[in-house]
Image 1 (spheres, rainbow, N blue to C red):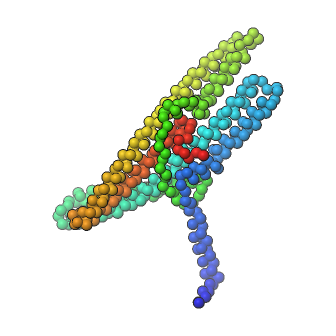
Image 2 (cartoon, rainbow, N blue to C red):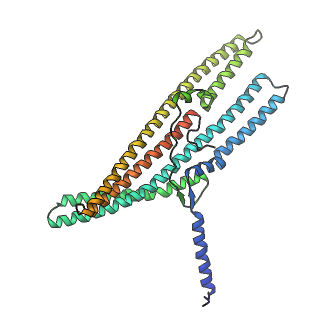
Image 3 (tube, rainbow, N blue to C red):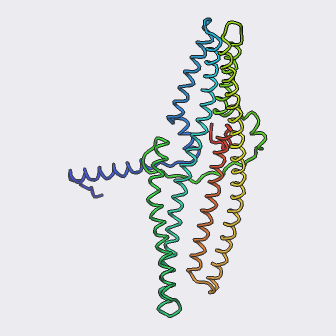
Length: 350
């Protein structure tokens, strides 16, 4: 067996290249959507802050409750602070999940577009060559060639834009997750079905949304101020001001409740529509796959050209992307509905 001898310089170069290859391999991170959301929920800065605020609120509430000198308004403030901090943790989880879902989908779909545009570019290049050949044979015009060239140029620009956008989107997602390097995003799992009614989501909605909770707390605080001001030793003007503040707080609460209900209804309709679009896109893909099979059979029979098969293949790829986009839109709609309802409907928030 022949022994290979390395000079110091060659050995250094070999080790450097080996280290570089290992570094590149290590920089590539395979990631799926559930893992991405779990990572953001475990170590994201927003949730870290929310959890820290909850601990502070718990400590403040405990000390206030244990202090016999605490007055009623101080106790109410501490109680409300704890309730707000508790709900804020859940709200932050839902918001973080929604952010990750959106960022993941944007990057993943762009990667698919790069593949699609590359296939379209190859097809359009072939179409241009065929059109040019037809022009030489007198069966196509210069205008036909110009149109084919314009189509190719447009696809080439789309491909260039998608390639330029992809690393930006991956970097944005990586920043959200605290990751650097090349992200290898896996296909999204099938989105869960929308198997909850609007009426059930509307039940106790006020208790699950931070904005409505804050408005309700303002009413409670204003009501307490009215109660403690309604006596013989407090100036009448103080009571009147407290009553006015209570009326304003009640109107603000009504507005917040109405806005929350409207947002929930809109988000629910969007999720329903997204589910329907998945079915439509799936049917379109099936039709395109059938057309491809028929075109391949015609090619074997000599009644179709190879470019016809290539065109049918690109159509299938486009239909696959459309279906993926529809499924991704359902994920986004469910994430938005989760935020609007204060309840996780994606199964991603653990």
